[in-house]
Length: 245
Ligand SMILES: Cc1cc2nc3c(=O)[nH]c(=O)nc-3n(C[C@H](O)[C@H](O)[C@H](O)COP(=O)(O)OP(=O)(O)OC[C@H]3O[C@@H](n4cnc5c(N)ncnc54)[C@H](O)[C@@H]3O)c2cc1C
Ligand code: SF4
Image (cartoon, rainbow, N blue to C red; front, side, top):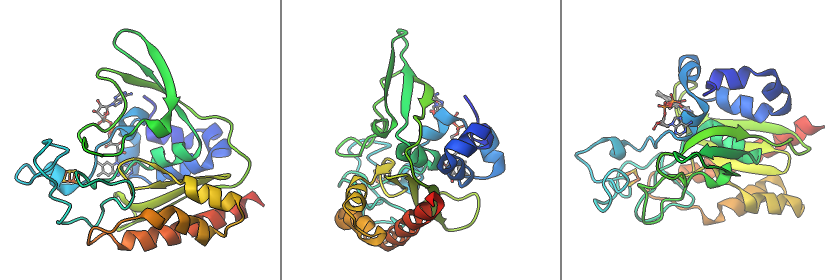
């Protein structure tokens, strides 16, 4: 129930998890962050315009109806992990930082049962069932987010968007030590495991992000996001290394 503003302003978050504070303040506007909650921000829905337009087909809104974005206005759509059924993105900034920080979520079911699992596994890829967005069971509430002690190394959050405030991102990158997550490029916050492995193997920042984006796809209008993410990712990795010194 903590608001995004409360989390971003918390002294422990600012000192131990600066990537989280930076990600939160990169989202929305001060007014939005004063109202947005942790659970609500994680579970916000896609910004795909077709999802909100009942005159257009959308497999997420109406399973089996088709996907208006596939051959339509897909400038903001996914470049990783998409399916022929849905190319929407998840746009939470906070979630990207939490994946880079290896956070867990705690949930409570209506029966009183509690469970805890990696936040990285909270959201789903679209596959054939884009209307199913998370691995929460019906009625389950998110009651907590647990962030472990951060790994050694610099932390940074970088986001590219069309205007400086009040805008969802086109792409974002969170770096926390050796862990990297990408935002707004997939149906879920994207753990960049291939980039992490490449970096651990001695690759440059550019080579590491290129390894992650090797499977990226272009649906016609969103191809620029591949180049944008490559540049943003390399810059974020270098900036995080600079902060670690
Ligand atoms: C104009 C605009 C711009 C925005 N820009 C950004 C941005 O750049 N970056 C960004 O990250 N976000 C952005 N947001 C999202 C914003 O920060 C909010 O998080 C989002 O609008 C959801 O609102 P809320 O947090 O009040 O959640 P709610 O609207 O209260 O909840 C959203 C959903 O989650 C469910 N829910 C809420 N809490 C829980 C819980 N604990 N357990 C289970 N289910 C729960 C609710 O039932 C509901 O279905 C933007 C929003 C707007 C309107
Ligand atoms: S990308 Fe997903 S949300 Fe957008 S129209 Fe296609 S099915 Fe609907």
